[in-house]
Length: 368
Image (tube, rainbow, N blue to C red; front, top):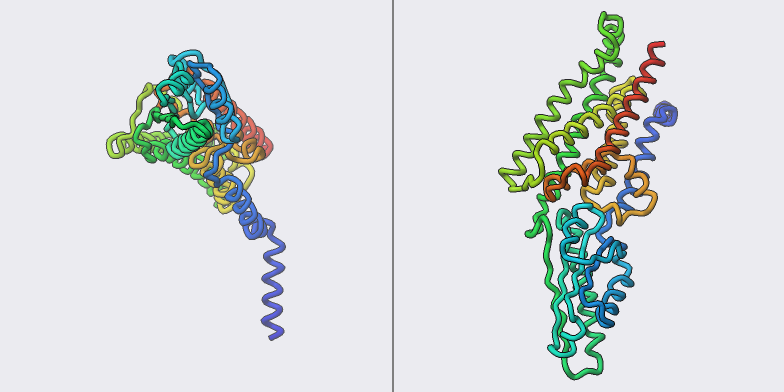
């Protein structure tokens, strides 16, 4: 028995001596429960909307106030004409536009009915469906308030219209997101594992003393993954287009250029990961915990970033996938040009530059 207890004690000491095992045992469950608990929420609060009030009378203003004071919506902009609606959605800051027709109060008082139009950005069909449901419920409540003590019934009829995905197909949301996840998996994770494998087996030192320069070695390691990732991205695009009928309404050359930019960003991140560890298992762990989970949960792929706590929203800014998902959804579903996505492209370029600079500095230190 003493021998067995001694063996168990030795195993405990072995576990507590290795900080990486402790991170897996304690850090990963805590991180998962915190991220899942805060990030996974179907409730939407303070969604940005714009209002086009063509009436401007007292009743329509009361309806506006009721919608904006509900806690679900935040006013982004007052529109002046229908021609501004398309631009609001293309910029990506507004999820819904409410159009109140002219003579709203007059129509209610004399005809007993009035129309209101709810237009939603359906590139994320779950969010669009939820927001329109909230709006219709508020309008229904407003209608009951207006009818209190009045014998003549009022009828406010909401007409709902979904932009970019009128049938609310969830595959329209998943295909651009899956391209992002798969490219991150292949480019960053495989590159970091490939380079650390060379270090672990000792073949990296052999390559370093060869006539090839370190930069040539690294570039030679990542070029196959660059080409393979590009091919796989196009296979997914073709499957999405011809099997699931996901449209590519934007410029295909611009889309390919942005795909290439994201692959280079992910490759740079993979190279940087390989500079901080010499073990393949550690590189895999960093890639899994540090890249895959945040990419899936905090990039806006499944759950709206706007719904998350402020801390997670701030963290999501440093995740490259967040910006690429905006780009790829904008080009594929909205037909956006460079004038709408240049900020996100610039952020990805800046991240790539940062990853490469850090990697180059760390490799230089190692060689010295």
